[in-house]
Image (cartoon, rainbow, N blue to C red):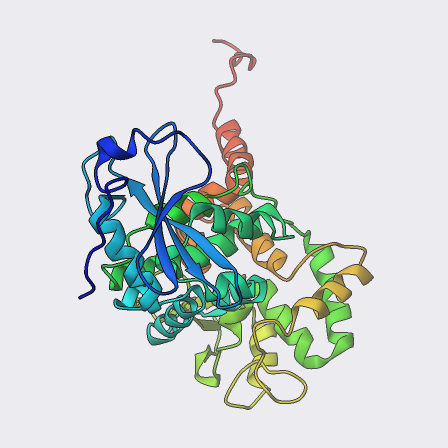
Length: 389
């Protein structure tokens, strides 16, 4: 173990508090290319690590809060000796935590999702927007400012920024759960905080006539694409679920059903792998005629991948004078069932979601339906009395 460095200026809180408040830290050298610094603030000071880049420059990053006013806990608040140990771990890779970069955390998270048969798409979404500098940074050296700068630089809709940030946060939490040396969870708790008012539901609900028009143009593109869109419209399932449908998932007969695979959302293994969802006899006949291992596939014969349908559907929607994604078919299916009086719990089961999510995202439509039900049972106090009463 490396010898601890003494510093009369930094090793005690009383000595540190005699320093003037300043933006520039006071540094001591710990090794050939790295050092530990202390920045005196108006509140508790900050421990800072400095690492030489080998080209005459260096980089600095905050690694913890000094124990100026709180007792050190070895995690968020560090004394002088704990700050030295953390700086050495980060600079020299003495602990596993120091070796795990943000890019490595995404790799681990993707592998974990695949082991749990979950959808790794969100990891790919983060990678698409990841910068080289942030990807190479050790997780244990991340600061809230690093992550906030990345989040605020995303040129995406607020709700999409929140989804992307949540995926990165999940990856960072995974490696922090595995590596006790990573003790800066507050960095991504603050830096990747959700944008306010971004999750307000802006679901596009299509009328039945609009969906029929979409189907006409989808089938004009290709029989295979038309069948994908029709199955999505009838079942309300996600495209990622439909892509995994197999021939044996079609239960034909007088009351045909599809055994829809569970989504790959959420944590852990899904208890129910497939759920029966009623479909029309007309759709069942079309699906039965496919005669392949998968029920739905591209014109090339390959299965539909995650992003194959997005641009294609938007082009079809614009031909119909609509601005909508394929997810609008799911929203429309949920609302159609709600307004038809199907119990919310049944709607949730049919669409592989929860009652809470239904109520959160479709409360206005539930209110419309509840209003109609209640009005049918209102007491009419102005009804004419029956004759002779």
